[in-house]
Length: 371
Image (cartoon, rainbow, N blue to C red; front, side):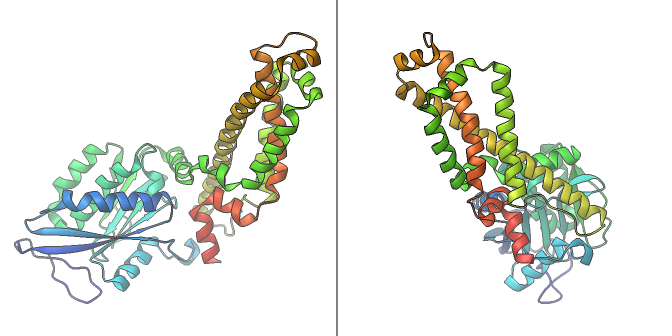
């Protein structure tokens, strides 16, 4: 291997040099799930990588959680170039960026790439598996580090990595300065699922406190209103399902329109337009999952509250027949739909920053920093 030629060149060693060496690896992670993965990897990999690829090698990891600022695709600046600049500034031997931005290569999700010359690597978190992505990230980061440290001797290690992560595909990089590029089968659907996983839509409930307060207020009124009791007992199951669909569509549509969540491409670049379509699809799915989780929680809460608060004799008198379990459930069902519409109105009280941060997460923070 070549020795160090300049201060901003990554440290490399001759293969026969077996003296103890400490490699400083910087993990530059977007806030949120990428940062959590980086923290776990930093705890586990030092022991796993000790004495690899040669005796005496030790690894120290530094985790930095921030959103990298870069120019758009129209300016031609690659994220890995930004990582390389940061490595030189920090004095790390190797810098690995864990990003939540989707990256595609020849129509396939890009999982990772490495530039040995620049001492920089990239790991695309949405391209990882949905369940326990940290485990797969650890395998891939270990492979990237050993590829960088071993140079031409890394083929066996990468073959073992590709056997453990069977969906990985090694492709020939189009850029001369990229030594390794890994993609994954599954195409756009896999990346979309990964983006939604990074957004963690179940946390949307906590991010929309105004909507939750309005929903609870509407539910409280509906549970003690005898006209609502009568309507719930008279409505057919089909009408209740329609009410559910309308209420969910209402709050999703209101959130998108009122807070400007739908993005529009500002360029004719096909890659940028494709990325915006992915963002919009991920936003829609994130909202749908988050709102449905909220609806289910609200339904269970309304049922338990109604069962406790609404006296059976009074309920029976209002609907003109003995009450049953189904009557309480139908009441909770209708009230939840009404409360969801009330929550849509309440979401208008939230600041746009709050809603976008809950829905877009790191991508919104990046959007604010770049503009």
